Length: 257
Image (cartoon, rainbow, N blue to C red; front, side, top):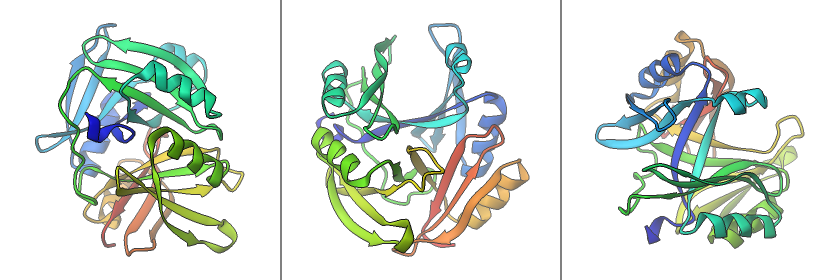
């Protein structure tokens, strides 16, 4: 587990209609879905690409629905000690959205936010095996992490201090500011950009596909709404941002159009 500490190791989408969402991502991304019962009488669906588990799917809990939580994607950062890291988040200027809690037979987690308000989860799985990320841009896996930040310098300092992330290239986007890429564990893994004031600070996770244009066609046929793209980004990759039929924001990336 030592190699994965401070890196995103899991992702899931909370939704209002798990059956429709499972079919949507299965058809668009090429995932297979398997549902597992949970201790509270609910279910948690695991998305896989081949034999590799990639992400999860769950219904929005009633308590969170009552608080106004809408369908969304979440990212989990590996932690050796969730309680200690939760305290470190607060000391570094972040906030706790949900105190550390055990998931029976799964692990311990906490929901926290960076100084700008972008939410992520700290997670220590019960299983001891080492997390091995897929090679960059492997179709069916998470290909990129993107933070729309309240303040790029402040947020980078926050994640760097907590998890040891390092700066990679900075791209000048003109009126949109600087896009700062970063590495986790030495591997280029994502980027940060300042919010334009219209979109609240948040993390986004790019699902890698063979072709964003073809994947977008599949997504639109099933009720997805295009938000941005297809667009080419520095390095030659192509991206699309959209909302799935339940309204969860999702993004896709491919090595070519």
